[in-house]
Length: 393
Image 1: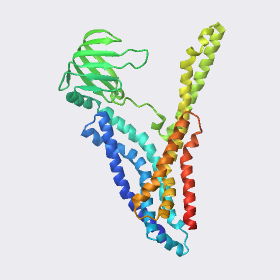
Image 2 (image 1 turned 60 degrees about the horizontal axis):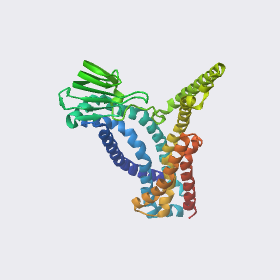
Image 3 (image 1 turned 90 degrees about the vertical axis):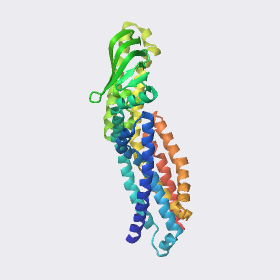
Image 4 (image 1 turned 180 degrees about the vertical axis):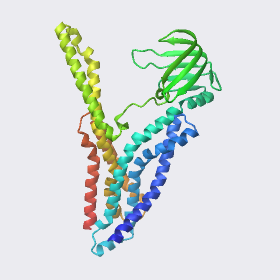
């Protein structure tokens, strides 16, 4: 039986390694090209992005690749009547399945770790490369297209001469609803990025301002965070970007904020009632305060959901193998591509829609956070039913 176990495990590892290399390379190229196109990056920045894209590509490639390897190996075993031969010797077919389950279990844990590395190291690294390249990208884009735009500002120039922007027009977007935008037209301007202090300084010469400030100045400087100068803007601090070990700390912070805000609202309401200012107690006046608490509660719901989502995504590797291995044997098809698509189609139509549904409902607090495991539970149930058929026939 040890020979059978080693044989199946070796076949799985060989197919998985070759498939993973090809799939990862494809996903890295797609990810880097997408980031380069959206940010306007050059070849130097693309090369710097490659190591940071790797964890992100692997965490998506591993589940599909292990399913592909499973369908290939077990489909070939069944087509060659090797499963029948094992049964004829009085050996349980489970001997053939344990290597796949052990490999998938190890890969599931590795995928959870990759997920954490991708959000804590990979995304931060990609963001840092983009931020450090803002000045270079902006000058290259302006020289080529005469315009450069982000979510926070837009630049249009007549020409670019070295480091000088000739006849530029800068349009700064308002940062809140109660602010107005700002337009600056100048004879010449220059961009100066300071990565250490995270600032992008725009130096204007002979500038005319319209908007929040109006006037004409022979020399004028404007500063903004480098993260706001990228085409995607700064990091939003989403729960999906937080490492697992920091999630409990963020939950505690949000709970302290809610407690403090509730105390402040109670004190404010008591003061208004004491002073007889009942108009201030109307719903419209309290909406911004209530929304602040509601947003924090929604964030807590998302933070509680995030660890379950990452572990459920990681252990999709094991669930895929539990369905793919017995189904490939039942199909007895040596064409591994056909077996793979027959296995993957139900997963695509059932598992991922269930996962998306559970994630969206959990974010709003409508269902418990562990509901994101629903798709995994259904796959395990289907895998057990298929395994029973393999063992009985």
